[in-house]
Structures are given as C-alpha cells and as structure tokens.
Image (cartoon, rainbow, N blue to C red):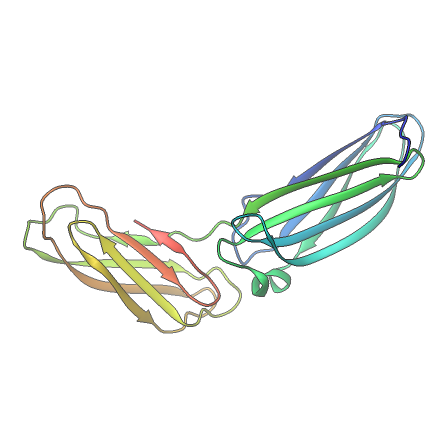
Length: 212
C-alpha cells in the first residue's frame, strides 16, 4: 500500500457524447495542479466496447502519457479514436467505456475514473399522409443517410404500426458511404384513431436505426 499525504492534483475525465457514429471521437483528461510546485503525471487513457450490461467486449485503444504540469496550471491530455479503429469492434447498442488511471510521481497520488457513452445514430425520416380513412391504402416513404465511411451490407427494413399492419420486413441493396437509403411501401388503415408508424433499419455494419 502507498501512503498518500498530498493530494494537490485534480483530474476530470471528459468525453464528447454528441458524436455521430462513423466520426472520430476524443477521450480527454483535464489535469489541474493546485500546488505551486511542478508535478509529473503518468496517465493511461483507454477506450473499450461494452455490452448493454456493462460487460467488457473488447478494448479499442489504450495510450500512456507522462506529462509535467507547472504549478497553478491546468492542462489537457487527449486521445483521438478514428472510425477505422472502432467500427468493426462495436456490439449491440454501440456503447463505449472510456477510462483513465493516473499516478502523480512526486506524491504517489492515484486517480481512477470511467464514463460510458453511446454514439448518436441517424434518425429515419418517415413521410406519410397526415390523415387516412379506415380501409384506405396509402404510401409511406422512409429514408436516412449512411453516416459511415463504408458501405452498409445485409440491409433490412422492418415496418410496423399498431392498428395498421403486422410487422413487415424488406431486404435492401447495399448502401454506399454517404448514400441515402430510401424505401416506399404501401400500408392499410385497419382501425380508427391516432396511429404511429415505427421503422427500424439493420445491417451488418449499422444496427437499430429508428424512426417514427
């Protein structure tokens, strides 16, 4: 065990939660030296993929740094993770855990911290008539833009709506990077009242894209 009498460093793990899937994300650690003396800090920043229950799936990237922080100063240590480093490692809900382990060499002060975040995903735009009569058939169009730098393969739409129809699935051709995936289907109004159309899109590379 280490004896820590001096705790004059403050640390704050920062994540950028508003990151669209397919874009780089950053892991940052704010380091503040509250003492007037120089401090040397050893830092490890790690980004990992976890399942919805918090169980570790795999590590994406881990980097170590040694930095000197002058007295009464604040600095930022940042690690950038590219799409090429994480896209093929994601699982189910695309949850990322970022973590840090810190040691101050002069005082043996330690700090550990972690945070979880989920990538933003595009929202499916659903276009349908505002009003229809019971028994009517009508067109529904749904679309979104592929945010990834690579094509989406094994694509499938699923459309459902309570009081409208049972869930229906449609296969879709590959969607290239930056391309808009679009589909039109015919639905049948079976019951009166306000109804919500729910659309889901899945592919090998991008799952659970939703729209209503």
